[in-house]
Length: 211
Image (cartoon, rainbow, N blue to C red; front, side):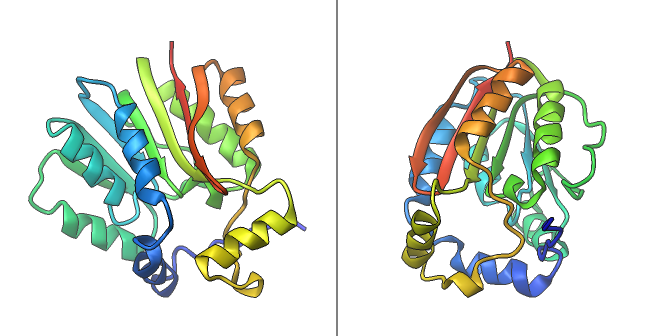
């Protein structure tokens, strides 16, 4: 049955995630690897599903001069990211649901995302990757720190157990897809040097560069 559930417009769901976010095992390892892949210099970056702006803040620390666009649709998350960057005129916050085609925003040296794209359907994931490709300048990089599916139900349950989540409390908003399919998609769309640069169980850093 098709999964159309997305709870992220709920403040309770969004704020509950933020309470747990810092305790996600090995998350900082994936974030650190992502930062090593950013272009230097980095003039303009788009963060898809920015949440409270955690990843974008790390990007800004690594590349302080970058003009940044932060995109999310959760009212609770938008309030948090606006608060985080209230004194930074180089950050533009745009409300947008990733289920819908991206608006016209110009071109970017990098498009990043952290644990957001797995909330859209698989066909929309593919369309979104296509839109990202069109947004990137030649030589630009797409870095997607993503939640992917496990090869088996047993491994998925082990992953949940490590997080302290029971199977019945698994987030129904998740629409997980295997890593291999997503890497293949990026290659088919024209991305080069496509690879998984870091992985721990269901957490993976998917990267591709525009020629």
